[in-house]
Image 1 (cartoon, rainbow, N blue to C red):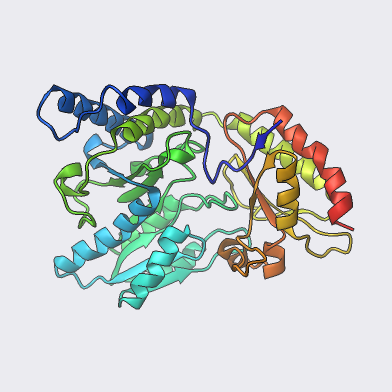
Image 2: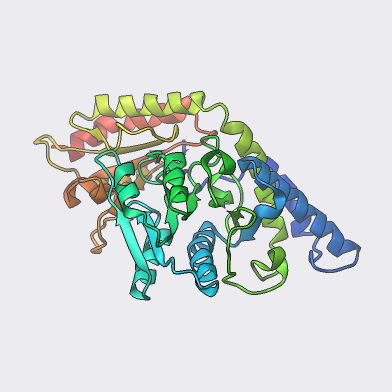
Length: 384
Protein backbone atom coordinates (compact mmCIF):
# COMPACT_ATOMS: atom_id res chain seq x y z
CA UNK A 1 0.00 0.00 0.00
CA UNK A 2 1.15 3.52 -0.81
CA UNK A 3 -0.08 5.99 1.80
CA UNK A 4 0.05 9.67 0.89
CA UNK A 5 -0.25 12.00 3.89
CA UNK A 6 1.38 15.15 2.51
CA UNK A 7 -1.72 16.88 1.19
CA UNK A 8 -0.77 20.30 2.55
CA UNK A 9 2.10 20.20 0.07
CA UNK A 10 -0.09 19.12 -2.84
CA UNK A 11 -3.14 16.97 -3.46
CA UNK A 12 -3.81 14.32 -6.12
CA UNK A 13 -5.79 15.51 -9.11
CA UNK A 14 -9.47 14.62 -8.77
CA UNK A 15 -10.76 12.39 -11.61
CA UNK A 16 -13.55 14.89 -12.35
CA UNK A 17 -10.99 17.67 -12.66
CA UNK A 18 -8.85 15.65 -15.05
CA UNK A 19 -11.84 14.85 -17.27
CA UNK A 20 -12.87 18.50 -17.43
CA UNK A 21 -9.36 19.56 -18.42
CA UNK A 22 -8.75 17.00 -21.18
CA UNK A 23 -10.77 18.67 -23.98
CA UNK A 24 -8.87 21.92 -23.44
CA UNK A 25 -5.53 20.12 -23.63
CA UNK A 26 -6.32 18.72 -27.08
CA UNK A 27 -9.19 19.72 -29.36
CA UNK A 28 -10.37 22.93 -27.69
CA UNK A 29 -7.15 24.92 -27.84
CA UNK A 30 -8.35 28.45 -28.66
CA UNK A 31 -6.91 31.63 -27.16
CA UNK A 32 -9.55 33.36 -25.00
CA UNK A 33 -8.54 36.72 -26.49
CA UNK A 34 -9.22 35.63 -30.08
CA UNK A 35 -12.49 36.84 -31.67
CA UNK A 36 -13.31 33.66 -33.64
CA UNK A 37 -15.38 30.68 -32.49
CA UNK A 38 -12.46 28.74 -30.99
CA UNK A 39 -11.38 31.77 -29.00
CA UNK A 40 -14.89 32.52 -27.81
CA UNK A 41 -15.31 28.91 -26.63
CA UNK A 42 -12.15 29.24 -24.58
CA UNK A 43 -13.34 32.58 -23.20
CA UNK A 44 -16.64 31.02 -22.11
CA UNK A 45 -14.78 28.18 -20.39
CA UNK A 46 -12.59 30.65 -18.49
CA UNK A 47 -15.64 32.69 -17.53
CA UNK A 48 -17.46 29.64 -16.19
CA UNK A 49 -14.43 28.62 -14.13
CA UNK A 50 -14.06 32.16 -12.81
CA UNK A 51 -17.62 31.96 -11.54
CA UNK A 52 -16.93 28.61 -9.88
CA UNK A 53 -13.85 29.94 -8.06
CA UNK A 54 -15.79 33.06 -7.04
CA UNK A 55 -18.56 30.82 -5.70
CA UNK A 56 -16.09 29.05 -3.43
CA UNK A 57 -15.54 32.25 -1.43
CA UNK A 58 -18.83 34.06 -2.05
CA UNK A 59 -17.32 36.65 -4.40
CA UNK A 60 -18.26 38.17 -7.74
CA UNK A 61 -16.66 36.72 -10.86
CA UNK A 62 -15.09 40.08 -11.74
CA UNK A 63 -13.25 40.06 -8.40
CA UNK A 64 -11.25 36.92 -9.28
CA UNK A 65 -7.85 37.31 -10.98
CA UNK A 66 -6.12 34.14 -12.13
CA UNK A 67 -2.37 33.82 -11.54
CA UNK A 68 0.30 31.20 -12.23
CA UNK A 69 0.49 30.23 -8.55
CA UNK A 70 -0.51 31.19 -5.03
CA UNK A 71 3.00 32.62 -4.62
CA UNK A 72 2.33 35.05 -7.44
CA UNK A 73 -1.06 35.87 -5.92
CA UNK A 74 0.55 36.68 -2.56
CA UNK A 75 3.14 38.87 -4.28
CA UNK A 76 0.43 40.61 -6.29
CA UNK A 77 -1.61 41.25 -3.14
CA UNK A 78 1.20 42.82 -1.11
CA UNK A 79 3.00 44.67 -3.87
CA UNK A 80 -0.11 45.53 -5.84
CA UNK A 81 -1.77 47.36 -2.96
CA UNK A 82 1.31 49.15 -1.66
CA UNK A 83 2.40 50.31 -5.12
CA UNK A 84 -1.10 51.50 -5.97
CA UNK A 85 -1.36 53.52 -2.79
CA UNK A 86 2.09 55.03 -3.40
CA UNK A 87 1.06 56.01 -6.92
CA UNK A 88 -2.00 57.72 -5.45
CA UNK A 89 0.26 59.74 -3.15
CA UNK A 90 -0.81 57.95 0.02
CA UNK A 91 1.43 58.30 3.07
CA UNK A 92 0.58 54.74 4.13
CA UNK A 93 3.79 52.72 3.69
CA UNK A 94 3.46 50.19 6.50
CA UNK A 95 2.83 46.45 6.17
CA UNK A 96 1.84 44.25 9.12
CA UNK A 97 2.12 40.47 8.85
CA UNK A 98 2.94 37.47 11.06
CA UNK A 99 5.99 35.36 11.82
CA UNK A 100 4.31 32.16 10.59
CA UNK A 101 3.24 33.22 7.10
CA UNK A 102 4.10 31.13 4.07
CA UNK A 103 7.59 31.98 2.76
CA UNK A 104 6.07 33.51 -0.37
CA UNK A 105 4.66 36.27 1.83
CA UNK A 106 7.22 36.42 4.62
CA UNK A 107 10.29 36.50 2.38
CA UNK A 108 8.65 39.16 0.23
CA UNK A 109 7.92 41.25 3.32
CA UNK A 110 11.58 41.06 4.32
CA UNK A 111 12.62 42.14 0.83
CA UNK A 112 10.16 45.03 0.88
CA UNK A 113 11.64 46.13 4.19
CA UNK A 114 15.07 46.29 2.54
CA UNK A 115 13.55 48.44 -0.18
CA UNK A 116 12.31 51.03 2.31
CA UNK A 117 8.81 49.91 3.25
CA UNK A 118 8.08 49.75 6.97
CA UNK A 119 7.25 46.18 8.00
CA UNK A 120 6.04 44.76 11.32
CA UNK A 121 6.17 40.99 11.80
CA UNK A 122 3.93 39.90 14.67
CA UNK A 123 4.90 37.02 16.98
CA UNK A 124 2.61 34.09 17.76
CA UNK A 125 1.85 32.20 20.94
CA UNK A 126 2.81 28.60 21.76
CA UNK A 127 -0.17 27.36 19.73
CA UNK A 128 0.95 29.33 16.68
CA UNK A 129 -1.80 31.96 16.80
CA UNK A 130 -1.36 35.73 16.70
CA UNK A 131 -2.23 37.96 19.64
CA UNK A 132 -4.96 40.38 18.60
CA UNK A 133 -3.83 42.93 21.17
CA UNK A 134 -0.37 42.91 19.58
CA UNK A 135 -1.97 43.40 16.18
CA UNK A 136 -4.07 46.25 17.52
CA UNK A 137 -0.95 47.94 18.87
CA UNK A 138 0.95 47.44 15.61
CA UNK A 139 -1.63 48.92 13.23
CA UNK A 140 -1.42 52.70 12.90
CA UNK A 141 -2.81 55.41 10.67
CA UNK A 142 0.25 54.82 8.48
CA UNK A 143 -0.54 51.12 7.91
CA UNK A 144 -1.46 50.30 4.33
CA UNK A 145 -2.06 46.56 4.56
CA UNK A 146 -2.42 43.81 7.16
CA UNK A 147 -1.70 40.30 5.84
CA UNK A 148 -2.63 37.32 8.04
CA UNK A 149 -2.92 33.76 6.72
CA UNK A 150 -6.25 32.01 7.31
CA UNK A 151 -4.68 28.72 8.41
CA UNK A 152 -1.07 27.66 8.80
CA UNK A 153 0.36 25.16 6.36
CA UNK A 154 2.59 23.39 8.92
CA UNK A 155 0.44 23.11 12.04
CA UNK A 156 -3.04 23.75 10.68
CA UNK A 157 -3.60 26.51 13.27
CA UNK A 158 -6.55 28.69 12.26
CA UNK A 159 -6.08 32.42 12.72
CA UNK A 160 -8.78 34.85 13.95
CA UNK A 161 -8.95 36.44 10.51
CA UNK A 162 -12.31 38.17 10.91
CA UNK A 163 -11.15 39.89 14.10
CA UNK A 164 -7.82 40.77 12.45
CA UNK A 165 -9.62 42.29 9.47
CA UNK A 166 -11.78 44.33 11.82
CA UNK A 167 -8.71 45.74 13.54
CA UNK A 168 -7.17 46.68 10.19
CA UNK A 169 -10.35 48.35 8.94
CA UNK A 170 -10.75 50.35 12.15
CA UNK A 171 -7.51 52.17 11.28
CA UNK A 172 -8.25 52.50 7.58
CA UNK A 173 -5.89 49.72 6.47
CA UNK A 174 -6.67 47.04 3.89
CA UNK A 175 -6.69 43.33 4.78
CA UNK A 176 -5.25 40.35 2.90
CA UNK A 177 -5.47 36.70 3.87
CA UNK A 178 -3.68 33.71 2.38
CA UNK A 179 -6.49 31.14 2.38
CA UNK A 180 -4.61 28.48 0.41
CA UNK A 181 -4.73 25.83 3.16
CA UNK A 182 -8.18 26.76 4.46
CA UNK A 183 -10.15 26.61 1.20
CA UNK A 184 -11.85 23.25 0.82
CA UNK A 185 -11.14 22.35 4.45
CA UNK A 186 -13.14 25.12 6.10
CA UNK A 187 -15.93 27.38 4.84
CA UNK A 188 -14.11 30.40 3.39
CA UNK A 189 -16.01 33.62 2.72
CA UNK A 190 -14.29 36.82 1.67
CA UNK A 191 -17.16 39.06 2.76
CA UNK A 192 -17.73 37.06 5.93
CA UNK A 193 -14.29 37.98 7.26
CA UNK A 194 -13.98 41.40 5.61
CA UNK A 195 -11.06 40.53 3.33
CA UNK A 196 -10.05 42.99 0.63
CA UNK A 197 -7.69 40.45 -0.95
CA UNK A 198 -7.62 36.66 -0.62
CA UNK A 199 -5.25 34.07 -2.08
CA UNK A 200 -6.25 30.63 -3.40
CA UNK A 201 -4.42 27.71 -5.02
CA UNK A 202 -5.90 24.91 -7.14
CA UNK A 203 -3.43 22.16 -6.32
CA UNK A 204 -4.25 22.26 -2.60
CA UNK A 205 -7.86 21.28 -3.39
CA UNK A 206 -7.35 18.44 -5.90
CA UNK A 207 -6.89 20.77 -8.85
CA UNK A 208 -3.88 21.19 -11.15
CA UNK A 209 -0.56 22.77 -10.30
CA UNK A 210 0.45 26.03 -11.94
CA UNK A 211 -2.75 27.96 -11.32
CA UNK A 212 -3.72 30.24 -8.44
CA UNK A 213 -6.14 33.09 -7.91
CA UNK A 214 -6.32 36.38 -6.08
CA UNK A 215 -9.63 37.81 -4.95
CA UNK A 216 -9.56 41.60 -5.21
CA UNK A 217 -12.58 43.28 -3.70
CA UNK A 218 -14.15 45.81 -6.04
CA UNK A 219 -12.66 49.25 -5.40
CA UNK A 220 -9.45 47.98 -3.77
CA UNK A 221 -6.40 49.95 -4.99
CA UNK A 222 -4.28 47.59 -7.09
CA UNK A 223 -1.30 47.97 -9.42
CA UNK A 224 -0.45 45.00 -11.70
CA UNK A 225 2.86 43.20 -11.46
CA UNK A 226 2.57 41.86 -15.02
CA UNK A 227 1.13 44.30 -17.53
CA UNK A 228 -1.26 43.27 -20.28
CA UNK A 229 -4.94 43.43 -21.20
CA UNK A 230 -5.89 40.06 -19.74
CA UNK A 231 -7.63 39.68 -16.38
CA UNK A 232 -9.22 43.13 -16.69
CA UNK A 233 -5.77 44.71 -17.18
CA UNK A 234 -4.66 43.37 -13.80
CA UNK A 235 -2.43 40.52 -14.99
CA UNK A 236 -1.03 40.14 -18.49
CA UNK A 237 -0.42 36.82 -20.24
CA UNK A 238 -2.56 34.35 -22.18
CA UNK A 239 -4.77 32.47 -19.77
CA UNK A 240 -3.91 28.84 -18.95
CA UNK A 241 -7.30 27.56 -20.05
CA UNK A 242 -6.96 23.85 -19.11
CA UNK A 243 -5.66 24.69 -15.64
CA UNK A 244 -8.31 27.37 -15.10
CA UNK A 245 -11.07 24.95 -16.11
CA UNK A 246 -9.63 22.38 -13.69
CA UNK A 247 -9.49 24.99 -10.95
CA UNK A 248 -13.17 25.75 -11.47
CA UNK A 249 -14.24 22.13 -11.09
CA UNK A 250 -11.95 21.68 -8.07
CA UNK A 251 -13.44 24.80 -6.48
CA UNK A 252 -16.97 23.39 -6.86
CA UNK A 253 -15.97 20.20 -5.04
CA UNK A 254 -14.02 22.17 -2.41
CA UNK A 255 -17.05 24.30 -1.62
CA UNK A 256 -19.07 21.16 -0.94
CA UNK A 257 -16.29 19.40 0.99
CA UNK A 258 -15.74 22.37 3.32
CA UNK A 259 -19.25 22.08 4.72
CA UNK A 260 -18.84 18.54 6.10
CA UNK A 261 -15.38 17.93 7.58
CA UNK A 262 -16.36 15.61 10.42
CA UNK A 263 -15.11 12.52 8.60
CA UNK A 264 -11.63 13.82 7.84
CA UNK A 265 -11.35 15.33 11.33
CA UNK A 266 -12.21 11.95 12.86
CA UNK A 267 -9.51 10.26 10.78
CA UNK A 268 -6.99 12.93 11.79
CA UNK A 269 -7.83 12.42 15.45
CA UNK A 270 -7.60 8.65 15.07
CA UNK A 271 -4.15 8.99 13.51
CA UNK A 272 -3.04 11.49 16.12
CA UNK A 273 -4.16 9.47 19.11
CA UNK A 274 -2.70 6.31 17.60
CA UNK A 275 0.69 7.96 17.11
CA UNK A 276 0.74 9.34 20.64
CA UNK A 277 -0.16 5.92 22.04
CA UNK A 278 2.47 4.07 20.03
CA UNK A 279 5.25 6.61 20.50
CA UNK A 280 5.57 7.55 24.20
CA UNK A 281 6.73 11.13 24.64
CA UNK A 282 5.37 12.34 21.29
CA UNK A 283 3.58 15.71 21.38
CA UNK A 284 1.25 17.57 19.01
CA UNK A 285 2.66 20.94 18.01
CA UNK A 286 -0.08 23.56 18.24
CA UNK A 287 -2.60 21.05 19.53
CA UNK A 288 -4.27 23.65 21.73
CA UNK A 289 -5.25 25.82 18.77
CA UNK A 290 -8.31 25.55 16.57
CA UNK A 291 -6.86 23.62 13.63
CA UNK A 292 -7.64 22.49 10.12
CA UNK A 293 -9.46 19.15 10.29
CA UNK A 294 -6.84 17.42 8.14
CA UNK A 295 -3.55 18.52 9.74
CA UNK A 296 -1.42 17.16 12.58
CA UNK A 297 2.15 18.26 13.35
CA UNK A 298 3.81 15.84 15.77
CA UNK A 299 7.11 16.10 17.65
CA UNK A 300 8.86 12.77 18.34
CA UNK A 301 10.99 12.03 21.40
CA UNK A 302 13.53 9.36 22.20
CA UNK A 303 13.60 7.15 25.30
CA UNK A 304 15.34 9.88 27.33
CA UNK A 305 12.84 12.54 26.33
CA UNK A 306 15.18 14.13 23.81
CA UNK A 307 14.48 14.76 20.15
CA UNK A 308 14.36 12.09 17.46
CA UNK A 309 15.77 13.08 14.08
CA UNK A 310 12.53 13.42 12.10
CA UNK A 311 14.38 13.32 8.79
CA UNK A 312 15.42 9.75 9.54
CA UNK A 313 11.87 8.85 10.56
CA UNK A 314 10.52 10.41 7.37
CA UNK A 315 12.92 8.38 5.21
CA UNK A 316 12.08 5.14 7.00
CA UNK A 317 8.35 5.80 6.51
CA UNK A 318 8.99 6.54 2.85
CA UNK A 319 10.76 3.19 2.43
CA UNK A 320 7.57 1.40 3.46
CA UNK A 321 5.41 3.53 1.15
CA UNK A 322 4.20 6.22 3.57
CA UNK A 323 4.66 9.83 2.45
CA UNK A 324 4.68 12.58 5.09
CA UNK A 325 6.69 15.79 5.39
CA UNK A 326 9.03 17.46 7.82
CA UNK A 327 7.40 19.75 10.31
CA UNK A 328 10.74 21.53 10.18
CA UNK A 329 12.54 22.33 6.94
CA UNK A 330 15.76 21.13 8.55
CA UNK A 331 18.22 18.69 7.04
CA UNK A 332 21.83 17.66 7.31
CA UNK A 333 22.60 20.05 4.47
CA UNK A 334 22.47 22.95 6.92
CA UNK A 335 18.98 24.33 6.24
CA UNK A 336 17.36 26.37 8.97
CA UNK A 337 14.67 24.78 11.17
CA UNK A 338 11.02 25.58 10.52
CA UNK A 339 10.32 29.28 11.04
CA UNK A 340 6.78 28.36 12.09
CA UNK A 341 7.76 25.97 14.87
CA UNK A 342 10.57 28.13 16.22
CA UNK A 343 8.20 31.14 16.23
CA UNK A 344 5.97 29.03 18.48
CA UNK A 345 8.84 28.65 20.96
CA UNK A 346 10.23 25.24 19.97
CA UNK A 347 14.00 24.82 20.05
CA UNK A 348 15.76 24.04 16.75
CA UNK A 349 16.17 20.41 17.91
CA UNK A 350 12.48 20.12 18.77
CA UNK A 351 11.52 21.62 15.43
CA UNK A 352 13.81 19.15 13.66
CA UNK A 353 12.05 16.30 15.49
CA UNK A 354 8.65 17.13 14.01
CA UNK A 355 6.67 15.63 11.16
CA UNK A 356 3.51 16.89 9.50
CA UNK A 357 0.71 14.49 8.61
CA UNK A 358 -1.89 16.05 6.30
CA UNK A 359 -4.92 14.12 5.05
CA UNK A 360 -7.27 14.62 2.10
CA UNK A 361 -10.85 13.67 1.35
CA UNK A 362 -9.46 10.53 -0.30
CA UNK A 363 -7.60 9.33 2.83
CA UNK A 364 -9.00 6.08 4.22
CA UNK A 365 -9.05 4.37 7.58
CA UNK A 366 -6.91 1.57 6.16
CA UNK A 367 -4.22 4.09 5.28
CA UNK A 368 -4.26 5.54 8.79
CA UNK A 369 -4.01 2.01 10.20
CA UNK A 370 -1.02 1.30 7.93
CA UNK A 371 0.88 4.20 9.52
CA UNK A 372 -0.01 3.05 13.01
CA UNK A 373 1.08 -0.51 12.19
CA UNK A 374 4.56 0.65 11.17
CA UNK A 375 5.20 2.96 14.12
CA UNK A 376 6.02 0.46 16.91
CA UNK A 377 8.92 -1.04 14.93
CA UNK A 378 10.17 2.42 14.01
CA UNK A 379 9.94 3.48 17.64
CA UNK A 380 12.03 0.51 18.68
CA UNK A 381 14.73 1.45 16.17
CA UNK A 382 14.82 5.23 16.54
CA UNK A 383 13.78 6.00 20.11
CA UNK A 384 16.40 3.88 21.84
